Image (cartoon, rainbow, N blue to C red; front, side, top):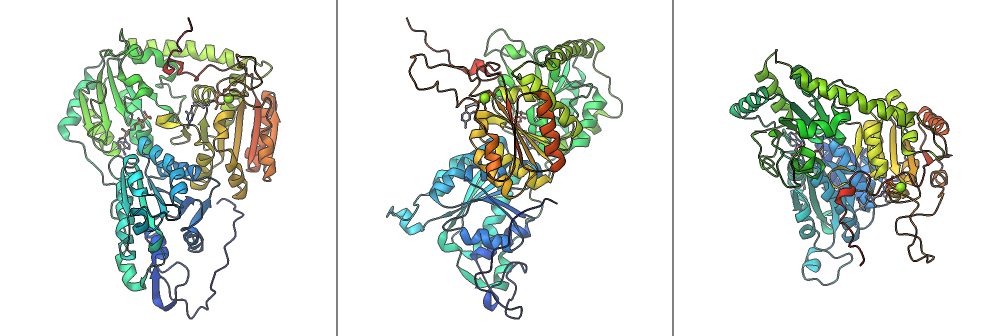
Length: 600
Ligand code: ADP
Ligand code: TPW
Ligand code: MG
């Protein structure tokens, strides 16, 4: 288990063993006269459903809830900003299939957590944002309460579901509904509004216990229809150039062995989306990652497993897919395995939708294809192998170079080795160039080890993800961070030190957003909007909180610092100085920038 430096808070009102009847769940702190209250019912309801960790930030009206949760044996991880607690909760949901819990105060705390809730919904991660709120009658009459806001209304459009509980006896139902909504079907973010007056409401402990619900089968299996499976198998059998695309839904589903069996038994080349890397080891001979720009336009039948045809796959059309114009269809036939029946045809026609949970769908497909399946034509697999080896050789040359200052590639070559030697480590990754280069250079070997900017390409998930990854998995965490990306959540280095988490942050420091060499065109004293203080010493932030800070300018020094971080498991920040002219605008997605109007 992880070491922590947390202390149990002193009980406000100490009681003796004889006069401490157990509260509703039987294992929280003392309540006199066999009574329970809103605080304890919330904790008991969460614990009853196997939820043992809360990510949050205390204050009115939830301060006592954070204390009591810790006193009741829950892991209460307290952050410096709610957004980071929220991101932690969202990725905890992805990693565990249980809703990650983020707890905040009212209006501003709630709003700070809301970005993460929307992020969870967009990424299909199960999460529950629980926020305290102000007095309903004052809020609804807009009479100016402390932190007044109609939080339920604000949360609704950004959440998969939103609920409010007004009475202690409804807490059990409220928590049960929130859990079901978060994890069943397509997972997502759920908001649970708990007004301040709810917490001290008391009721008999026994009566309270009876109101709690242990949710049975929170994410029921959804079996695909046999004819849908047959349709998919028939289409796959007709393919000359089949391709499988694995998305983060496939990683989430935890059906790793069956997915691997499907890929290997069919012999079909596959592409992992960013967070599906490692579902099969990236070194697998069927991985077509190093030939991505060849296989997408060339494939004739594509099977999507837990991946949407959104911007990350160029909406399934245009040049990426071999079409002549940006909106045109490339001619591919698609099979799409997804739990959401509405996902098919979102962008291009899906010829064979298979609706169900990935575990059930993949196992049904395995049954339908039987033990022997004709391997794809050698022309197809051979052409891919040829492209792959050419691209891998080219990459090898770049990685072997040792320029000064370091390039993204020469630094990431070290991270690549360290991850190979530590395949159980979690890899957190954000930035633009820092993201794209890491994704293509650093191979992953095991499922759900790579967590990154996700569907929105969002900056700021870094430190929240680091905390959650360390807390939830107990594994070493390695974070590869752009210097801009790091800045969004950098204050949580204190949190990482406070809980003494085994996190090694590597900042790819190129002095700015995309590059550090931009100038103010007016010649004025303000810097360009894209650059930061030159040679910023980010490692001192870690030192400020008792962690280890290292400043490195060579791959050798980077390797040494990372090895030591992993050996010691101490919170470490390695400030890796990268050539400030080495990046490109928006990393690999320059095409999404609107073209600036040229001045006449
Ligand atoms: P990526 O970004 O990796 O391409 P997306 O987030 O776009 O992945 O897609 C994930 C898809 O997986 C979503 O459409 C979601 O409905 C689906 N999904 C998530 N969990 C499951 C599951 N257990 N079974 C089936 N589909 C799932
Ligand atoms: C919440 C826009 C995309 S990438 C990026 C920004 C600001 C930072 C890139 O610089 P970094 O990486 O991290 O130093 P590198 O290696 O290229 O120099 N606000 C949010 N999300 C996004 N995506 C942005 C802004 C953005
Ligand atoms: Mg940068």
